[in-house]
Amino acid sequence: TERSLVLVKPDGFARGLTGEVLRRIEAKGYRLVALQVLTPDLDRLHVHYEEHVGKPFFEPLCEFMSSGPVTAVVIEGERCIEGFRALAGATDPTAALPGTIRGDLGRDWGRKVQENIVHGSDSPESAAREIGIWFPEL
Ligand code: GTP
Ligand code: MG
View 1 (cartoon, rainbow, N blue to C red):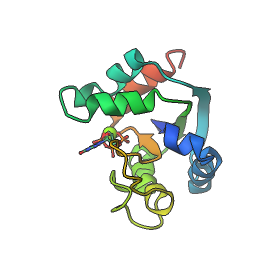
View 2: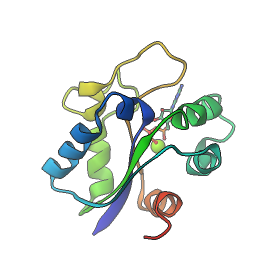
View 3: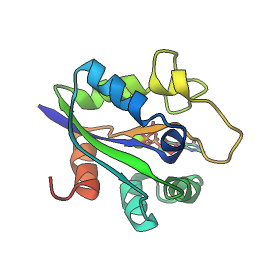
View 4: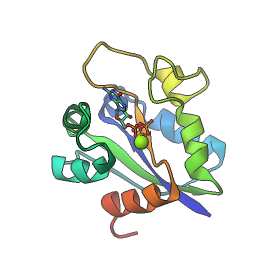
C-alpha cells in the first residue's frame, strides 16, 4: 500500500478548509497516518520544492508557503498518490474541474502566487522524499 504527503497550504488553512480537505480524503477511503499543524520555515520549503529551484515562481511560492500555518498530512491507501492528485484537480484553480478540491474551492485572487489550497506528492519517489522532510519520525 502507498503513502502520500498532503499539505493544506496557508490559503486553505486560513480559509478554514482543512476539515473539508480531510473530509474528502476520508470519504474517498484513504487513511490518515500522521497530521501536524505548523508554519514551515524557508529552509524546509526550499528542500520540499527543490524541483522548482530557478523558476520565477520559486521564491514567491516559498514565501507564500511560509506565510502562515499549514496542515501536513500523511495519507495511506492503494494508489493514493494518483488518487489524491485526482481529488485535488489541476494546478491552476481557475481551470481545475468542478468536483475537485481546487475546482470547487479555489480561484484566482489576483495575487502573484498561484494559491491552490493543497499540495499532493506526484510520484512514489516524491512521496518518500517529502514524507522524510515533514515527518522524519515515520
Ligand atoms: P503541488 O501539489 O503544490 O506540488 O502542485 P502541482 O504538483 O499541481 O504543481 P507543481 O508541483 O508544478 O508546482 C508547485 C506549486 O507551484 C503549484 O501548486 C503552484 O502553487 C506553483 N506553481 C506551479 N506552476 C506555476 C506557475 O507557472 N506560475 C506560478 N505563479 N506558480 C506556479
Ligand atoms: Mg507538485
